[in-house]
Structure formats: structure tokens, C-alpha cells
Length: 495
Image (cartoon, rainbow, N blue to C red; front, side, top):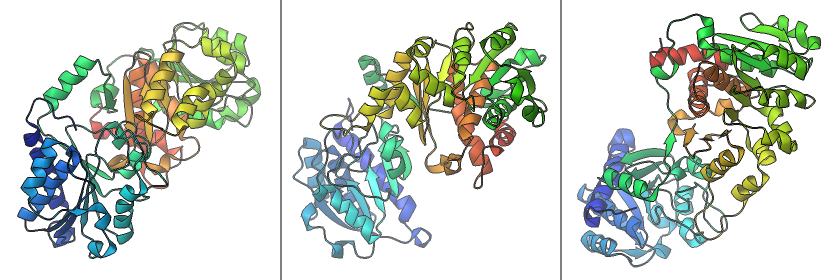
């Protein structure tokens, strides 16, 4: 934790007080389990110093507290707080099963941010004992063994499998609370202000650091002004051959639901009948090849394209024609991404109005070296993060890249980046269903048709996709997603 221009001791006291308040709010009283005992695990650095403050304040609140330290305190502030604790400090190696009887709250203040190496089993094993004993675990800043910059596990020989019950961090969430294993293992997240907001902003400005935001949505992002249907854009979704049209229909319906004025499905003549039997508000046009697409795109009112859902791998000429069709925004998903990954000429044709929406396997086909960096063991130093590789992919492709997952990362070529974290109170596990990605592609296409820029459309579309899933809940299938968009809009106050 950065100590900035504010006194380190003051910051440490504020941090420990914030953690203590969160513990007392969660576990004091019979309705919260009535716990009145804690085991605090302290590391040698400032995270351990925060732990000594927590121990002292919990004891002042009437709790029985045992403190175990990995080593002597290595910073002046941590040494001062250890002295103020004043009670016994046992070695971490002395923690045994008897010390965890009665399932006390276990406070993990071993290592916080800045972990750049793997920790030994003797360190994370203390947390594993707590997990096995059923003890609630509170992480100070971030769970020991997680990289705060990437969310990746930095531990030798394995790691705990249960999430912390509570993570209390300071001033702002860290990337490690949202990405990779850290997103699943951080548990409930509480952010405590400790007076570093100004210092952090100044530091980021001085270092030229690119900020990573969390996606959000508001009524202003989705409301419609007056005007006729063409004032709100005309989206074109291209479909594949007979029997492969469901994905494109899902995308088309999502584009219409999100507010595009018109949506047309372009399909081969051989597939027209099956689409005609399933479409009502979505229009249908015949598109058999590049010439047919060019003829359709002569209508300049078509201002956003979607290619990939159910397109088929035999329609590469349509991808080439769409990318060469002028300055129209294009969402490329599924089969279109596979085709681009196979053909360097198609990759070279990507432009700044494109949005790529790969899942992990498609990302690997498009950017094999970047995927390999993300999959490699971290080694020494800060671990490579999903944010790092998606930013690099967007810069290389010259367009927006959205890499899907519970920790969806969206990056623009200029370095802007947002995370759509479907975690904790935004968890949406029912999105792991066939067709959900096609709906996302359609939502983004509809927002592009309405005039949003590619990065904004991708970020807001990803946010809306999760909110629509949460509005439906368990039992969700892809067809349900477009139908829940109106409920999300009503909750936002969209007009």
C-alpha cells in the first residue's frame, strides 16, 4: 500500500480501523454468528503493520485475539504498530489446529499489494488450515498469494480453493480483485477511504498511468431522443447457410431491443424460408456473396454491421467485403474471428471502427503470442494480466478488443480500458449458455447503429448484457436476454 505524503502511521491506523469496522459489522452479535475471537496473521511489511492495528482494535472491542507473525517487522511503521499492539506475537509456524478451534475470524495481513514472487506452501498453508477448519477469512488489501495487478495466484505447490469471506481494500479496488483467480477468491469486497485519493491521482498523472475503469450504465447512455426510425440507425446482421441461422437471429433481435431503429438480417437465398418463419420486426434480405453485400451496402443508411454468429467458415468473402465497405462500424464475432485469425490480409483490413469480441479460444487464434504470455507461469516480477494482453491486442489490431469472461476486459487502441466484472453481487453464472455471446454481439451492434463510438458501445453493451442476465436469473437461456433489456431500462429510468 502506497504511503504517499500523509504520515504512514496515520494511514496505517486508518487502514486498520477500516478493516476492524468491517469485521465488527459482519460478525458482532448473534445474528452475525456472535464471533468474538480472532487470529491475526501478520507479515513483515506494512500489510502486517495494518494487521497489528486490527489486532489492537479488536482487542479494545472486547475480542480475544491471537497474533502470529511470519517474521520481524521490516518497516519503521510496522515496527511501531507491533509495539503498540503490546501483546504476545507467536511465529506463524506455531499456528496449529487447536488455535483454530471454534472457528475464529482469521485476518490475513501477511502480504498485500506488490507481490512479485511465488509464496511458499508454509505461508499459504496457514490460510489452508483456516479453510479446512471452517474459519471465516478476512484479507487485508488482497488475499495473500494473489497478485494485486493481475489476480493470478503466486504460490508454490498449490493454493487454497475457497474464497475469502471478506476482502477490505483501501481507496479503490485493485485489478487483482477483478481479474483471473483473484475475481473468484476475493469474496465480498469493501473499499475503505484512508485519505490517499489525491496522492493516488497525482501519482498516476505523474507516471502517465492509464486508468482502468469498471463498466457502468446510466439512463443517458440508452435513452432515445425523438425522431423517425432512421434517426436511430440501421443495423445489418449477416447470417450463414441453412440450419445455422439461430445465432444471427439472436444478434438481430438484441440489436433491435437495444434501440436500433431498424435491423436487417442478411442471409443466403437458400436460408430465407427458415428466417422468414421466425422473424417479424427484423427485416430480411438475400445476401449470397460479396456482390450481394455490396449491393445492400449501397444504402448508406445501413450504419453498423455484425458478422460472425452462425456465419460459417465458407463466407470469408463477406468478411473481406464488410471490412472494405467504408467507414462503417463492424462487430466481428465467432466465425468471423476464426476467419480473421487464419488470414493475415483480413487482419490487416481491420480498422478503428471495428469491435472484436473473442472468447479465450478465439483470442488465442487471433493473438497466439499474447495468449501464450497470459497462460505462462508468472516467474519473477509482476505477473502479466488480462488487461496487459487485451491492451496489447487492441493496439496491434488498431481497434477495440473485448475478451469475454466473468472478468471481461475491453480495450481501445489508445489504451483506454474497462473491466466488466460479473462477480460478487454482479455474478451472472447463467450467462455460460449457448448463444449468450451472439446476443452480446447484437447489443453492441445496436448501440453502434444508434451512434455510440466503438469503445463506449462495447463497454456499455457488456454491462447491459450482464444486467439483463441478472434481471432474469437462474434458468436463463440466450433467447431470454433480449427480452430482459426493457426491464433493465425501466430500472435505470431510460426514456
